[in-house]
Image (tube, rainbow, N blue to C red; front, side):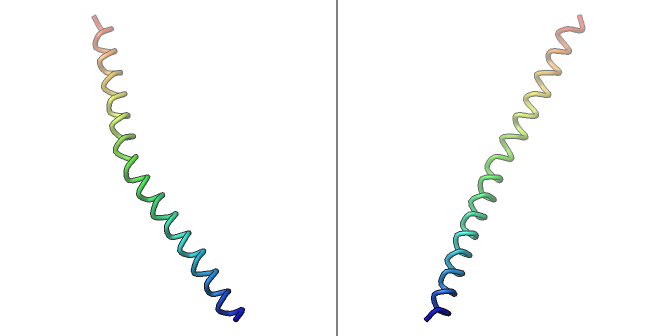
Length: 55
């Protein structure tokens, strides 16, 4: 009986770890494009500022 309980606990813990990993990977994929877009916007704003101050 102890062996079955131990296997169930290990399987449950593995399932929770798998679900957590899946959520983390999904969150990273969602946030990566936003970070890249924010960086591009920052670069463009800096370039516009430089062009305005050249005159």
